[in-house]
Image 1 (cartoon, rainbow, N blue to C red):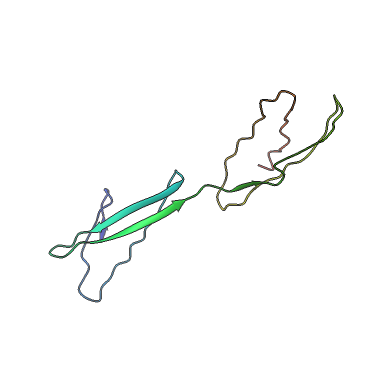
Image 2 (cartoon, one colour):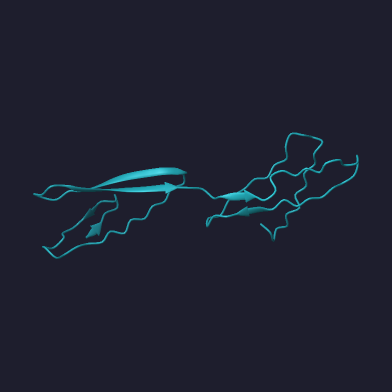
Length: 116
């Protein structure tokens, strides 16, 4: 069997007890289900087909304290709280942390480069 640059494989499967194994690899840059039909044309024989299905998911990130309620805080004072964010998936998660539009809340990034 020989794969061509256009992704088509041509060759001969010898008689009766001979078989081939195809290694199928999937990859996607988009989340969601992907389907591909493969057709095997057989000279002087009925065609054979098979379906490959993969469901691509993104990383799963959990925020351990999604609500931080300081209660009463004195004006011009500073209160600290650490929010833990964890990537629970086996793939990296690119994240962007932004401040809300509320000008009364000040967000300072205390994450050191070692933690990223």
